[in-house]
Image 1 (cartoon, rainbow, N blue to C red):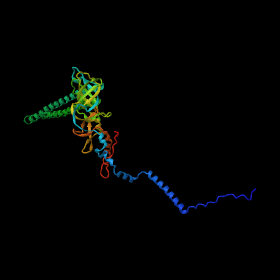
Image 2 (tube, rainbow, N blue to C red):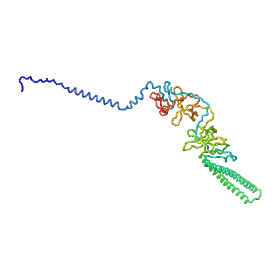
Image 3 (cartoon, rainbow, N blue to C red):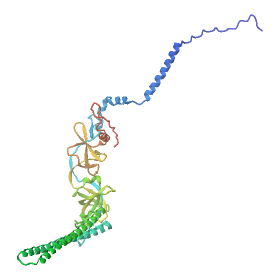
Image 4 (cartoon, rainbow, N blue to C red):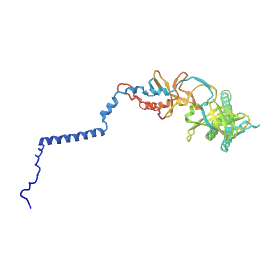
Length: 420
């Protein structure tokens, strides 16, 4: 039931509605949002896009930072500059070269006794012993071919003498008969017979001389072929023709890159595996004429005097070539930089520059090596630590023409732990 006197229900008064933005305001907000989105997209694209040619040129021509001048840099091919304030300079060892007395060998290679002259009373050329039956058979053929050459040469000389004597006699007879024909009654038949005999003797003599010369040439060709076979088997035939008492011939294989380090007459020392407590001294007797195609080595033949007769054909050992006492320049092996097939040493070139000088070095031992060519006494070189400059030196040969637009050499910092 409703009461007439009940209060009416309370209802909140309605608030006035907020005014809607105008169309101009909405367009302004929309344009601002679109512009913000486009700006963000453009910024992302600019950050992700690689630098164009213009940026590369700007980076290349940008001035070097203040500390870049202390780095070593390339001046030209093989010429480096190390500033005095470079931290790397403290890690390098600068030495001045001076000659010293040494017996350090120029090359150390392996060798084998290929022949020796044994003791005995027979002719010395018949007392050769060889390290293989092949060499023994070839040497027997060589002796036989030499005898054939001597015999053929003697036959040629005698044939020439015989032909000359016979033709001289017949020539004199023809001249005598020709003179008598004017003063005496000499039958024409007798004169013509003498002249015919002279012509026949001359013709037969030429044939006999030609045959004898052919025999000599054939004998010499045969001897040359045998000598070539002996050389390929491991011994130079010329050495076998100059045999001496107690002579042993050692064949050593010299790598092709070390051919220029050896010459005839160099003193050498050899220690054999079977006789480790003894050192045999000899000299380079002869250098082979060919390089082996498979191993690219040159055979060097050594003459060693074995008075006790302890060396046997076939014995192996280590040969030190060039052990004669001499004045030479030595330097640390770490001073030498190997680039391609050439060895270089960095030599002071004036001021703070260093030039890569090509050198030839001998065998290394105890961390040092002998300079054979390229350096002189008084040169200042970089010894220890030069390996740190190897990368920059190789770069100088590859990019020797690269320069900055203002003419300055291209600088390249060198890491302290650069790998060789």
